[in-house]
Length: 321
Image (cartoon, rainbow, N blue to C red; front, side):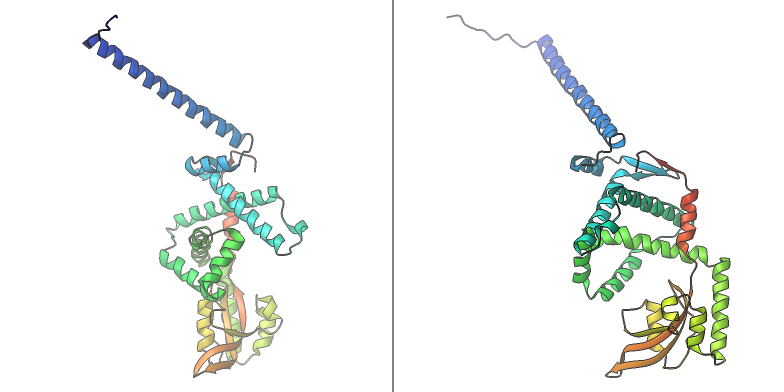
């Protein structure tokens, strides 16, 4: 029998072995890099040239921030467009399930375009807000959400509606809806404060208030001047309402007024109001409902200001919407 004798390991053999291992690892590394580059090219072509948006692409987009467009030098993530398009699609599908005429529902292309337009609008609005150092605080968000919970009859009801309509949690709703809404509200208050239209509306409201103080008929002035045309046609009548049904400043004024007394100017997100309470209901000495009328002098529409900025924005799209 032939005896096999192990060759003693020398410095040369160790060096050769290590070199071979390094060569293998280097080769694997190059292969992985080439694979990743190939996948990146594949997904780039698939997304931008072929319009891929399937489940695998959606998973990739959560990690890799492929841009769908540039707005004034700021990139919009493709993943946001896909997510917002799916949300709108879910909303309209729910409308059909609830009995809406399918012919009134936007096409898939229209829904996608709508989602893109919303993204551009929100981005430009945020850029404008940054110019004025405006921001939405956590307290702002929770206050607005609390009002919604009250109006909807409880948080469980809010959660149910959000899941059914959009597939959202309350936290998602706050980010996607409340933050942009509150930011637009703050931007509107800032840019409108000294506008010619706002000054003219306040002057008109003060003139009407002076007429009421002199004994003019509230209903007739509501028909003539109120920008709330629905109630204005009925002399400003809002009917009976309880707490939680109106915006805060309006509600506070209405529930503190004595019947027959005309309020001072009350400012809300909708504009300037003049309020008169006609009747009240009480339980144990506490007002539970009021019957009131109002005259509204609406605020200038901040959305028109933002849309003008959108029209002026530099928008470069990387895909066909």
